[in-house]
Image 1 (tube, one colour):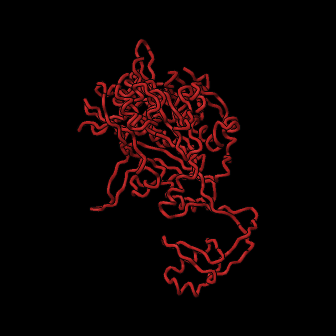
Image 2 (cartoon, rainbow, N blue to C red):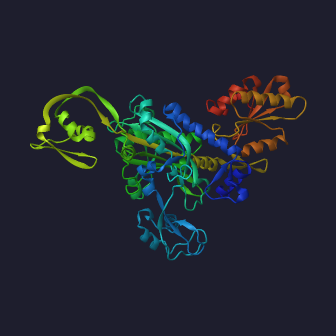
Image 3 (cartoon, rainbow, N blue to C red):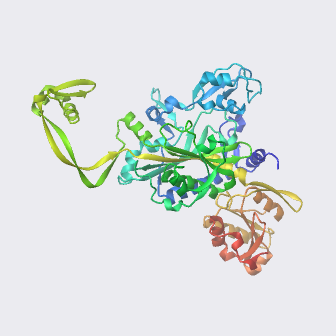
Length: 577
């Protein structure tokens, strides 16, 4: 087979899966249009994701704006640190990702180099655009966020979000109330994100506008045992740990229970979503032997993360492609937004039994202090509650000013109080999915070529749950009422929620080939026997075998085949043609 990437993209453009955006004006790298079939395939993948996270996990979906004010991204760290190392080719003037140039030149560790060291290292590398040796270049940081202003004539700065996660973090207080102030809980979101990539050259793999599906699961920091861990405890897969990577070793297959017990994966929550992600990716059509889970190296992992794993899918053109990230982000995000916004982002956890605690309480002389400090009095009273008294009084800080309160203006009492609970900042477990990369992985891995009756057949071997068109309906001839019966079958299937396509154009063999090429898993043919027996033939795309079944049973049979509740091979053997 020739270059799969070229074949897949040619088919995708020709048959309406993926197009370059605004081609008539000259396409801009990093933006794509999903055509009629691609948009439907994408929606099916998103719906499978929803089935895993919303239906099965019970995490409700929210939808936040794609533009947010600057303060959100100051808190998240994106304004200060969300950048890539960039340089410009002195020959063709193309802007380049300096670390990608280094990777192409066989230089390792580019992400940890200083800009000056990286510039020196890539001087002997060739420009990927014009293939000239770069020579002397300057490497500098380029922030990847798209900036805008909010409101006419306004100086209020906003940014197109680089990820969907921040909307769920800033909505924490509302979500906590929705989930009745109880941990654990989660929220999910599917939507557009934007990154002003320097030189996107990898088709659907690296886009400036892309779709993310993220879940933010808020858990007690001391209770990271997943309540449904048994579901995936015995689930096995190859895990490429950071130790394996440092030693140049291959991945090792183990169960999630063993991985947690041995400390390979930090906790049950991370292990659970590593396994769920593997399950989900295989469900949409990623082949297990082209899927691996790689643990972030210590110098690669974010400083606040306890553990992080990437689901990587192997592409014949691009090698191992990061497609999903699963991380324990601790309490970093909620603390950052609480500090920036001044809004507490905590959960009150009530103890099973109240705890007795000795406390020293300061009781101010309110009448004197109230007159003395007037408008600041309330703040002074509040600050005194947390002050440390001495023999000559206590110091408090109000609006940046240190105020000394003499000892004769307050009373100190030692008390035993009941502590009924505590305020804690939850930790966040985050599985983050790149939907466009998942779409490309499904397209590439579904693409196949074989030979039928001496002719090359191109086929997309989609999972029936992902296929844009789920069943095609053909009248053998467009006369003698066969077309009428086929049309009635098509409408009956559509009313059952099955996307059926009626096709009466050309020889039956050509119609099969057209549907094979767009991945339609099943085809129904109405022939002359149909009029006598009220039966039709149902053809399987992959085996090209056919069975004959009654028209009355078609809706439930096709529905079961599409949903995966029934396999084509399980249809009664006596019906095989």
